[in-house]
Image (cartoon, rainbow, N blue to C red):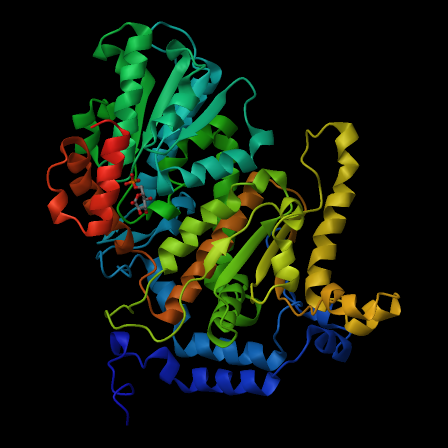
Length: 557
Ligand SMILES: O=P(O)(O)OC[C@H]1O[C@H](O)[C@H](O)[C@@H](O)[C@@H]1O
């Protein structure tokens, strides 16, 4: 037995790359060799029909993946050996599966029906979830109807959400996605960056008397958010020429930290609560979604939650062969481990999903960007990929070149909708077929390419044939839904949440902590006073010391 074999597995587990299931997949991969999607489709005319699954409104086609029935069996065997279902059930039961923070992981409770019972430390959390949703609903309706007025009695015309990371990306993404469902007489803006330019641009054309700030921070200690909130308060009070008593009508908070909220000067009566068992990147269906609820109304927010819940139930109960998050998770594991794929593209064919991939970057990369297992041992396998992408049609005229003819394996998700959004101008509806034609054409081109023989047969000069050849064999998933409704958005997000879960479970990492973001925060705190005073540069490394000196010189210090 080698030293590696004796390495203790997390939770008594055999390290992933030492399991027979992993070895079987490795062997299978070498047997497949350079197998081409063209051959797989030629061998099975039913492949396009057989390799599809349905969850809720989402039709998921995985036929254009480099897998056979045997691959899928072996991958499911890996999921079984790593007890994905066991960890999933523990999550849904409210067990503290976030071991490094000793916390339950219960974003699924945020969308559970009112009569569900989910316990954390012996207490059913569902009534509290619904109490907050109800309180949010009452408040959202007051703002929407104009009943909630600012300090001077004017109704609110603009809501500005101040938050960062999970307290920004979710609501900002969803607001964009559901724009056609939003109240047209109310604008919602999002400020996240500690660069003062962000807040400046968000408020420069606003009337303080008609502006409501939502300060969103799970911890209420995040320096960017507290700094921006403090500046926003100064802007408000200056604009209103009022004292701090005006704050109550213009500031509400979304947080787990009541003390922090009170210290900031926001009345805790104007605080919407959530709990430490909701991870920041899993939180936009909690109180963190208040700005979105104000925009789309409580009813449509509820529809979105029902969409989440539908996929939760699917993930919890569907058999492995039909379980879509399980399948998508396994495909990612397959490419990372056996094709050395480093990246994963998410390419929506919907303008409204323009912020969707940015949202997924936090969800996926903060969850699975880990290199030690749950017991702290270094992992010997690939974990989370680099997630990237923008709306597909724009990408086609920019970076798709690399997808089609570059040297990298980049599995991609294509997401599209059959119906254009409801209130599109009639003249623009006709454009939808063109959009969808591109959507379908791209996965076809990526999968099947164009052979040198096909290129030559078009009369292309021999020296240009290699340049005009498309080798194809680039794997893609296509997700097609009828239309982009609040429920469909919830379904999509839950699908990705659980896909990320499956991968973390197999890789045996804690997908719910994020220690990797801490070091930079500590160092920034140390460097900030040095920028002001110039004292302490000797404690810095020579590169940083030089940069700080240059910065100070440029600022005339
Ligand atoms: O909501 P907050 O406590 O302000 O946290 C905002 C964000 O900042 C942190 O640094 C974490 O990396 C994120 O997971 C979190 O979403």
